[in-house]
Image (cartoon, rainbow, N blue to C red):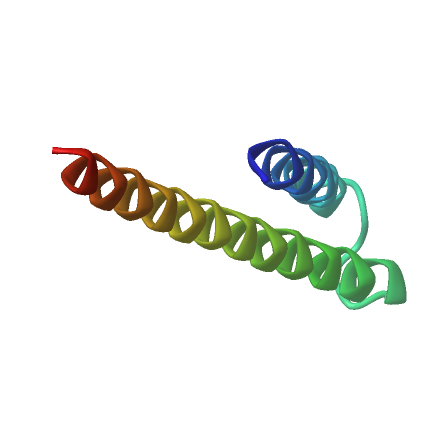
Length: 73
C-alpha cells in the first residue's frame, strides 16, 4: 500500500504544480482559467486523500504489529 499512496501523491503533486504554474500564464475570466483552478483544487484534494489513506494504513499496521508483539510475550 505505501507504493500506491506514494504514486497517487506523486500524481497529485504533478497535477497541482502544473495547475499552479498555469495560473500565472492564463487570463482570468477565461475557460482555461476555470479549468486550471479546477485542476488545482482536484490535485490538492487527491493529495489530501492520499496522505490521509497513508496515515490511516500506517496507523492500523502499527496497531496490528504492537498487538502481535504483545501476544508473543
